[in-house]
Image 1 (cartoon, helix red, strand yellow):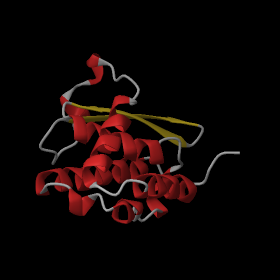
Image 2 (tube, helix red, strand yellow):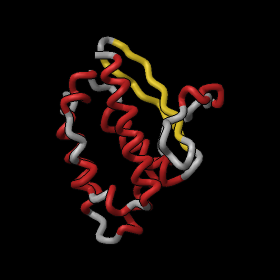
Image 3 (cartoon, rainbow, N blue to C red):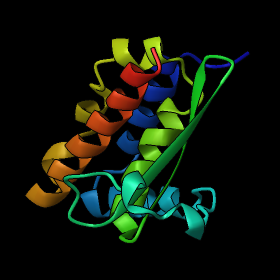
Length: 138
């Protein structure tokens, strides 16, 4: 049976809590980025760029059976891990699930306060883009 959005979020919170040091958590993020499905070079176009990120982040999606499936890439290794984390949680969800979520698992992980201000702004932009896609398709 498929896990609920909250279960997936809780799994990531638990996963991050296994590491005491933020360096280890960054390593985990980097590993998430390495496991991101390959993103086509042809998809790296300006209209797919997430605005507000210092590094370049491309986010694309398709809608199938009322669910949104995201693909993404970034030219920066930690940012790639962050977008990988987000699409691991939100890809395959309905617009309603995404829009009704408060994204608080990000705070429970402690991610935002342990990123540089520019990366934290990028994280906010990625979340805003995911929400906008859900809004557009609801």
